[in-house]
Image (cartoon, rainbow, N blue to C red; front, side, top):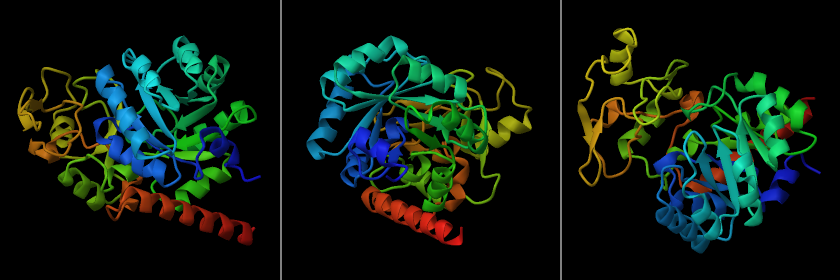
Length: 333
């Protein structure tokens, strides 16, 4: 049995890749394309109203019979959970908090429940609460970062703690098949990838944001910071370095309301709503303004992204690369 078969059987997938729930950037189109390619799609529904969240779930179900997850960050109340479960979400993933208060509700609805964790202690607690798989996140991850350790340090500890009981997925800085193979060798049974799927055709990311991801190079292209905390105060996040972050760092990283350009409108939504500097809003299609100055969430592996392919083709390519890398490693060994 291959090391990833357990996760695939649990979720009904063929490929042990879970596309990360990158907030409003990962809509039903992306989740359906990933699920249709044999991996696990994902919807970030923490801040989505219940009726809209349920519609997103129904849209993916109508588009594909493949597996997908609904994600809720428990730093906020999961207000749409009941609606999402009633709409038939097959998988639910919780992050940033204790999932135990919502496990019974998800279980009664028949959903497979996973939990994102930062370390072995959180993993043990999640499995004890009923999680059927865990996601070990490293500090290399893009977006809001729950992790406190690098993936190479956290993953072996989490695998040792709970890997005999449930599949462990790895998240953080992974953008290609070589990275996938590397964490599978460390005991992971699957991976979670976010930034790589932001740079796909089905992503709702603004074209300027996607181009910046493709053009990013160098080990210091991203930063783990608390700069863009409007909407989620004090939560660390990894972003591409940009003009807003550079000005804030040059000023010594002051807190609100003393940051450079505090209160400036840098962009507007499709509906015309203002987006202020330091908001945690990522650039989305239809937004206008200075997209470069917004929160450009990105994992540390962004330098390995060189194109904007269809998501389904990307899934196939990533898994082909991973299998080839694993085979080369076995041959060399």
